[in-house]
Image 1 (cartoon, rainbow, N blue to C red):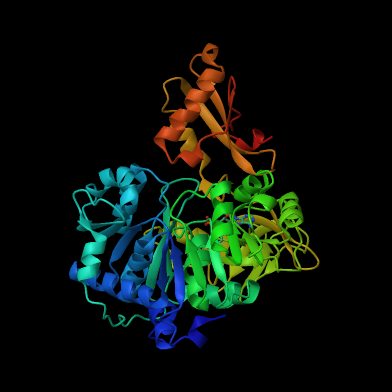
Image 2 (image 1 turned 135 degrees about the vertical axis):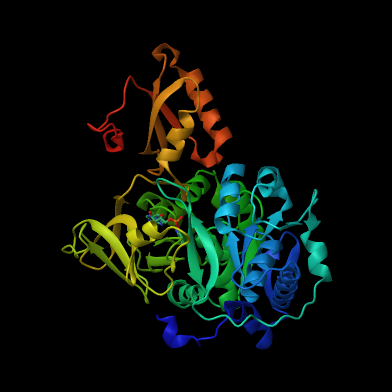
Length: 516
Ligand code: 3UK
């Protein structure tokens, strides 16, 4: 699908996902279920318009960035769509990060305004004074501390707002993506990108309809969750269940039983955790589900099989990336090859190439390249990274893949050292750099190791200043040390003390020699 052929040159994507439903008479239909509230499509438009006006009042103009540090809650929807409707650029960010990460996001994006959920102020608060660009903070969903309350300002703003005359190719929003070295990269997405994902994956693979109800354990700030729980159900005029808390296996089952979604979106680690809940199929009514989706890392075929046996519904695995915005290779309901990432989603093209960019013979492993009109325009202020990633209309994802005779794609690892842990990026370099901040540690190397579910978790090999200090107590101390210093999900689940690390002649750690 090419947006230049299907969308008008002047196009504001908020009119497509928000205003269209009200214009077509669906204002009273439920859109979002949040705690014990229901937001109708009319409410979403009202929130969008009021937030847009509140941002205009603060001096936010077209192309200005607005940091969205929000839980899956109404303020996320208001800030995201309100900013887009005035032609500004919302930048949702990961709510699991630490203060230093938020300082970076604020400075790199040069956001003028930040909308922050109150529950995140503890970690984000110290960052808010450290950006020369940030002028205003609005705090939502609880005590605003020294800042103004989002809800109060929104209630005072007008509910009438005309969309800014953006082009279909204007920047609409950014999403940060972590790399193996260096800081996260802001992937710049355009006004047409979400429409492309809606028309391809959501419509043609999920077959999303207005009578569907989506629930995504992956949060809205992830590219995966933003589609699953945000613009996909909105595009279809369907319903979405928002859950602002941590998705544990029990809480997710409970929500499915109470809220009765038709489609559930998870990551392999969560499916494994849910399968470990005894008697879950008897304790929780999951009969509302017509389809389950997995992405973020490869879904082991065992999990696919056990889930179908116990819950009578398929989990279809598909691969997406932040840069491509959503899923471009996917299994189809009823035609899955468990263990594979499925076939190309209609509207995209995918090829496997060698290191010179030439297609490899079918069945051979190479680098995955994808073409489609939802691919980011570029990485913000990362010109070299952009050039390493984009090749004309193609993008190289950094994944190794092989395609079988029937067109199914099989994941064969990463081209870099990056790890996907519970569906979220972990850079070994960052974990290593954190370990060596501990006074007992001389050097460290971090690699991925499969757990008993065949899902990758970080493992650290550590060289100590004093080898005699090695032992379970220090291992636990180092795990706690990492959890305390960087986003906790990055901590090494296993620590091996070793006398030295394998290195090249130039002193570079050879991580591949440590992989089990
Ligand atoms: C890996 C998979 C094997 C792969 C994502 C939108 O995960 C998403 O985006 P990220 O930028 O990570 C992308 C990378 O994750 N990956 C994702 N899914 C799979 N590997 N099988 C899979 N099914 O390395 C890819 O390059 O965080 C974004 C929509 C869905 C998503 N999963």
